[in-house]
Length: 85
Image 1: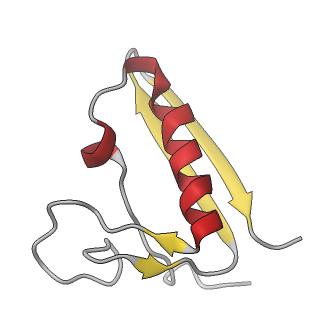
Image 2: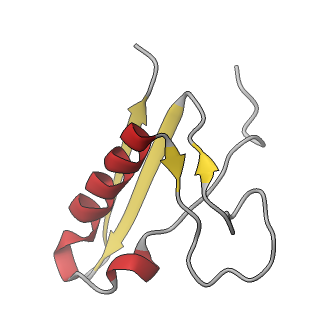
């Protein structure tokens, strides 16, 4: 079992703004595209170097990826993806 302490986090909110009900679908599409390109993008507007909450583009690690989104009216979504077959 892998350690839960070894993860990186990014956010697409600064890139897409408010999308009302479409944020979960849009962020999932962006995540899958970035994983295909082999990167985890930095969180825009981060000014301090940070290896967890990314202040730089990083290579996408192998393993599982969790996409979380919150929408209007207390609507939440979670999707888990894996690079392993």
